[in-house]
Image 1 (cartoon, rainbow, N blue to C red):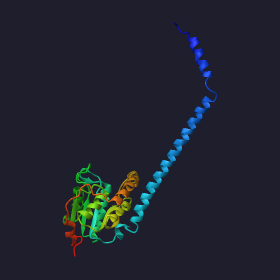
Image 2 (image 1 turned 120 degrees about the vertical axis):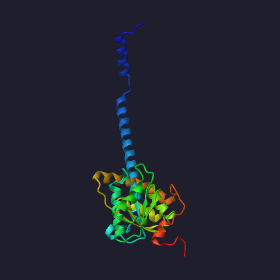
Image 3 (image 1 turned 180 degrees about the vertical axis):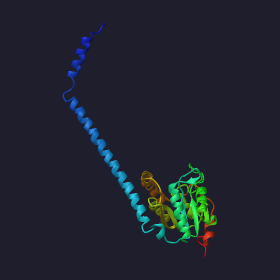
Image 4 (image 1 turned 90 degrees about the vertical axis):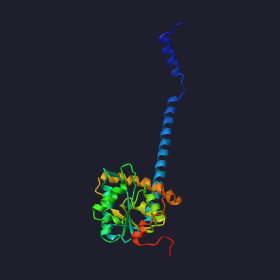
Length: 254
């Protein structure tokens, strides 16, 4: 049986006319409801993120208050802990150069007796700690006062290993100013009387802005670490190298 095209069109038109009154109006209203719901959820998400990030940043700045300094104003301490960063072709990049140059100034000013360079010896960009130690030597720092921690895989691990492996209880932390609140807060939470020293960076505005944004997220992750005191990724046997350099006694000794 053949279907006449004209008849099919007529039937379709009748079906369209038989749609309930207000069908299209209800559809438009449903779309508006979904848009309002999506907007509300978006605003709630933004609000929660602001509270979480803001609370984390408040913790880090409060915990490190009065413990962040410029190089010229930094107090003395037995050891400077230099936090690692990416390298390229076995050479430090600008962020790390700034940290190392600040450390050279601290050593030359007699504000520290030893230096602990902490980073990833098997990092994605290369051996950070070897590049750090070599750079310091090139700048005139005696290699004998430099101790290498090849398993400072992140800021928390650097602080935890400084306490648990190297027995450090007083130190200057050297890194850029945006990183200091989290670094100082974590180290102090883990038992180090830490003061932060702000390093400069010959970096682009974009690089600085990107790293500051990343720091907000990293600070959110630091809060549970500070609460639960997780073990570092690599926990080595105790190393007395730093204590020997500064002439300190092991923890708990009389």
